Length: 281
Image (tube, rainbow, N blue to C red; front, side, top):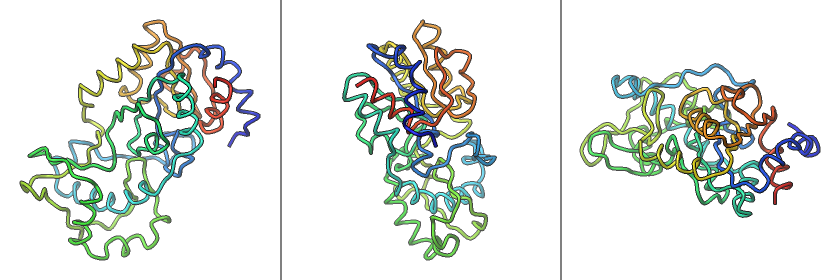
């Protein structure tokens, strides 16, 4: 973890690029690692194979496995708190520097920190949708139903949830799930799915359009904590670059957008964003 003094030095090249400009922000899992939510592709992250949309909708066994793991993991995400990076973006928004945030995260930590204009590009962990009737329910309500169907499950597999490895999408790494009973939609009996965009699933068009509009309305784009490995985030960097807007990337390790960056800072987001907020507000 960088010291604030090192972070102040790291943003020296960023400040002149962003000063006086209205900045749209794109964040990824790297901004939440200091809150205790691991990322997918950071330098220290273990290999992960997230479930695809096709697996989830096409195989009852996959769905059972997912819901069993999520029933443990979502509780960890619910207990996390925003970190200094999230708070720095709030400060920049309140100062009129940041116009809004597009986040690839589903953890709601930007909203918890106080950011007002947030586009949850990949959905949010606290809501569940029925793929048949379209009803949306809270994840907390579903937890009550799953507890009733699977009494003692969390305690039997996890003991202390804090000891279980958790993925960024609230998926807990546990293996014994064959005895878990998922819950169908209580309104129509259909298949329930987290209101999260899975790998292999498209982000809703309306959400993408709002995100592009945010980028187009800004004078610059700041990327924080994303490797930009998937096109879902990289397209906004390409759009800003194509239109001649400066792009600043703050991320540990390389990203797919590095060749498009006006400035790249290879560092963590908490101290770096804190230093940036200090310099621009």
